[in-house]
Image (tube, rainbow, N blue to C red):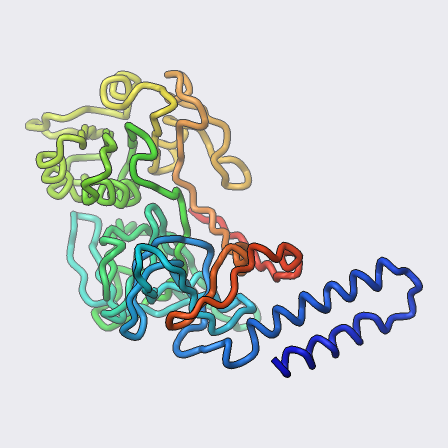
Length: 408
């Protein structure tokens, strides 16, 4: 407490020593000093601040189960936030009579190296990559979200390394510990996919994230329709898996999956097994170049396919679209210049769907440091120290670090 009082006195002295005669300035300065001193005391003064191995803070996510140093419980999940000014803050809250903390491998502000454990051929032009990390950690993905990867791509005029950067959606279970899987189509001229194809077990790839695309919650809609093309199946599978493994989620899912040929259909065996064993999942395949024995759809996704295979326009309907640019334009229209959803067009608009019924998968990376920090309850090994909600004056004083990044 002595440290707190000294800091409060020093801050107040500095804030009121200006030459202005404005009483409002003085009052504001004193108020800022008090707020700053309180923040300093709670956030920076031992023993209230116990670092251990934790130096993270995250936006609010309540009732997330996790573990920390043998302690049990649940509360706010921790995500590495090295740009955040609040260092070494374990974040805990009580729920269901437990007390847990979860460690995640991803960092939204820092490139992390992950080691390639194995890779296998998934189709004639795609490969499945498994990357490993600490077996006690989860990757840190929400449904549905993706990651950003980068690889060296020569040097610029100043001799500094240039990078090629691409987003990918892991197809492994977000709750899996110690590994994640990427399904990547290898293009002859694709700089990043060729880099992945050249990797050998033991090599590393740099990853940053996660990047949330659509925050899915169980039963958020009665019926979800999905239109996917090629590797656009990966975010769809992430949502499908989340729905089917939750016995309390009764969402119906209808998937239209378009590819060039039957050999290009990724993860077909898994999708067929899921569909056969789950009555709430219906799948229709269509290909541009069918074989003689092909029994599915033929050609591009048509109005008739949408009418027969997807839920009708409704407030309780959500249509997800992910695929190559040409397909996206045909189905739902082009992206906006700022890479946001853009105005709905294409088949879906013609069939009566509205913008609030359709989500087009865009990669729009936005991360913030302490934007939601005042909604958190901070604690360590059982103590509950501070709930910032009653102190709204602190909100404008909290640093807010945001950046955005768009990519195909």
